[in-house]
Structure formats: structure tokens, C-alpha cells
Length: 244
Image 1 (cartoon, rainbow, N blue to C red):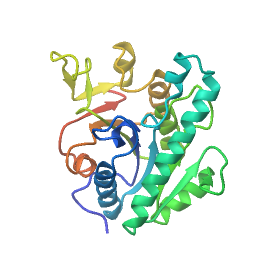
Image 2 (tube, rainbow, N blue to C red):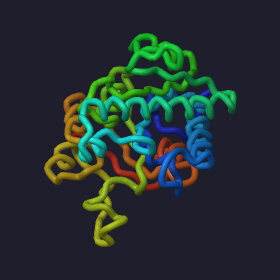
Image 3 (tube, one colour):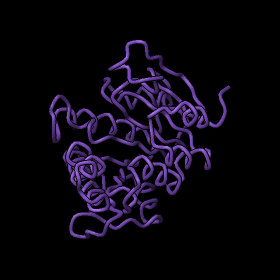
């Protein structure tokens, strides 16, 4: 039975950054942080909302950074995709330990650890109550996991895409570096692009704009952050076709 406190979303995609899994560590996954995030997502799924995830890999390997140090960009991006698979498997294990049905679907073929991505099969998993974790980005180099998240959100016919970050929404500058940075409650896709706001890469924003996919940006590290945003509570930024 759906929780009446939740916003009227039937199916949502949550984009998690790899860095968000590190906690205070400089590398890898903090098990306490992972557990809190998984508990929060499980609560939303238990309310009746169909939830799918895209996770980054920056806590393990970032292809663009490696390319800047001389590594071939294509090889670096594929290594980054493999890092997202590691994170996806860790998320899946945490869900299964809590008896929450979850499956990993990979854009790169690796059938011993994950299902290959097939759109209709992934939708079937969601309709059967499983949390679907999309790994390996789009399966192609030169595309970020933000672009992968936007693409999967549309392929899954999600009502909204939620991007979990390290701050409370979209700011005019990085608030961790600039105390004068101001937060936006609502933006249009065009404003994100014209102001050069670095919440997502331009390809992801353009894809969302072309398909009128609303985006909500929030801080995943607040207590029950995902549940609160789904209930329309807390602090966040909405990115929409037109600001009211």
C-alpha cells in the first residue's frame, strides 16, 4: 500500500555518486554510510514507489582524472564503468541483507555478476517490486553516469530523476569553497546551462530538457534525506521546464 505522505510519483530514478559512498574516507565505501543510504531507499520502496538507481564510480576510479594523467580516455572510461559495477554489487548486497529484493543490471556484458541491460526486462523487475541498480553507465566511453541516469530514467518512464549530492541542492558556486554562494529553489534547464552550473554535465541536462524530465537535487547525507524529499520536505532544488 502506498504511503499517502509520499509525493505522487509511481516510479523514480535516484542517481548516487560514488563519492557519496565514501563518508569521511578518501577511497572506497564506508559501510555505515552505505547502510544509512540503503535503509532510506528501502523505506521509499516499501511505500509502494518503484525505485531504480544509477551509481557512479568516483570513489574507486574516475576515467577523466586518469586521462588527465596520461591514460587513454577510452580505457579510463571503461575502467570507471567497472568501478560502478563494484558499487552496484555492494548496494545490491546491502539490500539483500535487509531482505529487500534488488538486482544489478549492467550496460557491459558480465553475466556471472549482473544481468545484461534489456529495457523491458528492467521494467518487469520494477513492476515486480525489485529495486533495479543500473551499472556501467551507458556502456560507452565519453558519457558520464549523470547522462546514463537521465537516459535510464526516460527508458524506464520514470516520473522524476533525483540526484543525490554532497550539498543541499544547486548553488551559484560551490558552497564548500565560496561562503557567498546562494542556493536555488527552482531552475529551468536553460538556466542551468546558461549559468554554467556544474550540477550535471551539459549532455545530461540537454537530454532531460529535450524529454521534459524533472530533476530534484538534494543532499543524500541528511537523515532520511530521500524519504523526506519524496514527501516534499527538506531542502532541495527542482530543475524543470519552466519556473512558476
